[in-house]
Length: 161
Image (cartoon, rainbow, N blue to C red):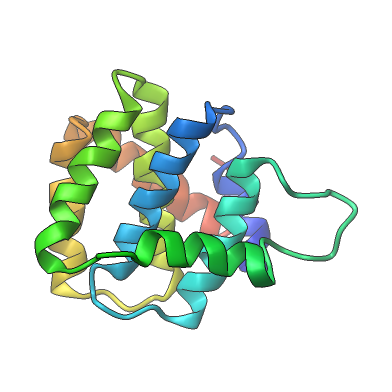
């Protein structure tokens, strides 16, 4: 199973959100992949797939798996502006505030962040620390975070949920 298909399965139940909430979710996804201070090709590919799905820009008849070219670079450039270790947590907090009290958006943010972390199959201490910070910032109960992680693992290894 391709990673694109796994991501589609993992995001199948995620509802549509307002543009502002979708952008906040995508910023959280970007921050997750940037926390180790390098962007891997696998992470960029995953981001393009996730962004296309969340933005609703995917043409089901297209063979293209996600955002491409200028559209993808535009999103990456937008989120890369003024990003450093000091600002990362401030930006996370601002993105979470943009979600408001929308529990579905908070859970979707965690789901997308986990997908980003899993995309390069290379865990770092900073990613683990960021995961803990993200759970706290999103005010998710640990059992909710665990359930989401279990659902993602099932989707990625082609097991029924």
